[in-house]
Image (tube, rainbow, N blue to C red; front, side, top):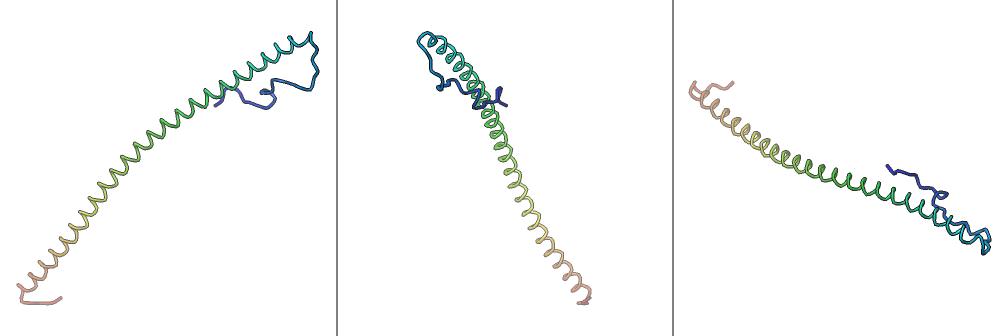
Length: 112
């Protein structure tokens, strides 16, 4: 999370409503500079925090992508195995039916 919460008040570095005389100009300029430095520091902290968070999200996205690829591979293998089992079941059912018919015929053609 951001180190410092930025608000409009914290980011305000200049108050233009006040008239500044020649003798106070240097002091006001120094005050403005100090406020600007504080605002820049707060922005830098927030930007660095955001960069860290974006990098963490990118890393998490890469991990998620890799997991999704593995899941897709496993799902594809599972589908192939399921199709193989279904085909085997159909072939076995047909073979059982043929054997049952052969046994019936061998027993003299009795129908049950």
